[in-house]
Amino acid sequence: MKLTLAILAWCGAASGAAAQASLYEGHWGIADVPECVVNNGLNSSCPVLMITGGQFQGEESVCDMSQSGVVPGIDNAQVFEMNCRGEGDTWSFRALFHRDQDGRLTVLNEYGPTVYLPVASAAPVK
Image 1 (cartoon, one colour):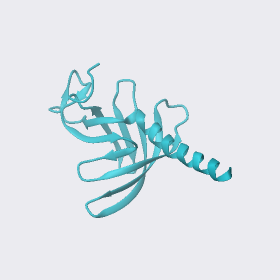
Image 2: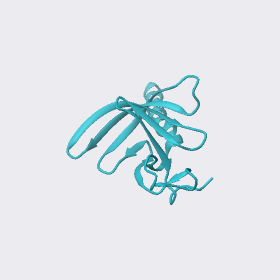
Image 3: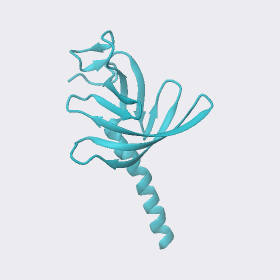
Image 4: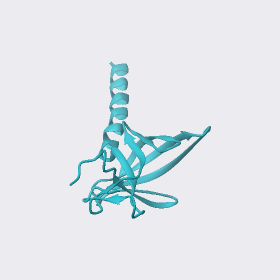
């Protein structure tokens, strides 16, 4: 019985991390280059990352996202532990993810914020 409960708790935690990351799933593009911003500022035509199944994938790296907490008082904001690998190296960091009411994704880490827009070809236009 204890083993069954332990397995269920582990499965719930693993699927919970992916479920929490699902708010941020999608193809995301550059938001600070005017040539990339389309559809009245709602989308990007320059894809740079994809978030799916609890993974954050850039051009040359992939990070597993593990939720470490919500941000009280800010809707759609969560903190994730990021365990990454790419180009023969591994590293970890903590990042705050926030999706605003206009659909933009902001990722804040020790280097500052980066804002992304949904990629026009992968996201419906509002």
